[in-house]
Amino acid sequence: MTTLSPELLRRFDIPGPRYTSYPTADRFVEAFTAADYGQALAQRRTGPAALALPLSLYVHIPFCESLCYYCACNKIITKHHSRSASYLRYLSREVDLHTEHLGLGQAVTQLHLGGGTPTFLSDDELKELMAMLRRSFAMAPGGEYSIEVDPRTVDATRLNTLAELGFNRLSFGVQDFDPEVQKAVHRIQPAEQVFALVEQARAIGFDSINVDLIYGLPKQTPESFARTLAQVSQLRPDRIALYAYAHLPERFKPQRRILSNEIPGAQSKVAMLAQSLEAFSDAGYVYVGMDHFALPNDALAVAKRQGRLHRNFQGYSTQPDCDLIGLGVSAIGKVGATYSQNAKTMEEYCDALDHGQLPVNRGLALSRDDLARRAVIMALMCQGQVLFESIELAWLLDFREYFASELDAMRDLADKGLVTLDDAGIQVTPMGWYFVRAVAMVFDRYLQADRNRAKFSRIGPVALGFPGRTPCGLFARRRRRGFCRTGIRLAHHEHGCASAGVDAVPPCGARMGPHAGHARAPAAVGQQHGPQHLDARSPDGAGARRDLRHRRPVGVHALRVAVFRAAGRIAQWRAAGRCCLDGAVRAG
Image (cartoon, rainbow, N blue to C red; front, side, top):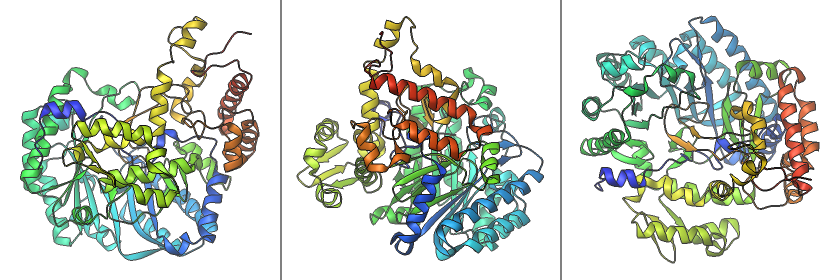
């Protein structure tokens, strides 16, 4: 294993997207509607992908009985289990709407139940959910069928039930074994309980058992976390996911219950990360990449050795790249050259289904540039190399010319020892593999545009006499809806879950349209993607906004309509030459 000092980690472990998708979920826009998603589903049904590519399913169960203070997932805290019965009825409606577009019996090779707490559902409800999915989809033999498990909600009997339902992979949320840390984050679960459950799961015959850990939690110290690492090494799960906690109480209310003075400093967090890498390497784990470790005989480690790793919204996967159907509140999907996300609130989610509509409220139609860059980024993230010829043949471009500025940046990373460059392509070094997101970020055009935009962000507001503000302040109340946010975004599974792992977010105004960051005229966007994908910043986007307004229930989305109208006014100013690049309005 490459020796990583705390100094190296401080230098290269920079915040950035986890690239479970490209473009990342913070680039999704509300101009992408349920109709656009339905069109993507219809194209899959009639196209060659229906037979050539299997499906992956993600089902979001948002309920939890108790609140974990560190958590930033999309969740509903309740002890009333009757709410889950109603939720299952809405899930059934959403599944039926998908089968109307896709047809019955499409093959599924991967299923993941996340949350929230999927084991909040009773055994009968889990049986109902699996029966519902099997009625509409064909679960392929040998697929990966996993569920996230709160150790406090299961026993040996429930584990047997999960196995009988077809689940073959479990993920236990451990976070930390230290009792003081567990008390500080309001998640008490004795180590003995987890050890007993893992032993029972092995006896039942689950193919793989994963454990989630978080470093940087309140009252953690390098010494206390070292004890947790020793216990996890003794537990010896097949896979380990290690995430960094980021404290953002201004965005996530549960984190306000955490005392800031109890959170370890940056130096301690770096020390805990270095300890973890060393401890798991000494215990015989393979570093798969991006916070994930696996035993050498686990399918994930084997896939890495054989160059078969893939990446989706659940992280690394052994399954070939396939379309993903996201079911449930806040769930994210990928179908063809589109991404989509369901409504993030239960009210909006149920309202759409009550109107017979798919509950998608934002997404993105990928451009040719997006697809080419996604291929490069995923090659780096999964195989650790990019071959120029393969990209050139797949996307009919000259790699050295198309990515000239990116290759210049790669030479700088090569000087730092993160990559090697030759005539054939780019190879991530063993040291660079630990910082692969920093390598991939070089090809992220959206981040490049953000950096360029940031250079001029102060000119307009100061000239207007409003220090620190821009006209994009109009969207302050809609930041969480995807129009305009500042600061950083966290991501865990991307499906509304953000307990750990930091993703960068563009400055104000960077996400006003589906192709933000692209140097492309609005007319070209409309010609390429049709009216439903018009950039919300362009004057022609008004037609798309009118179309959206007719498709959505007015009562629920009135504020969204107002925001689109405001976006249209700014677009008109910009088209008339009265709006500079950073969003400031010129006089006259």
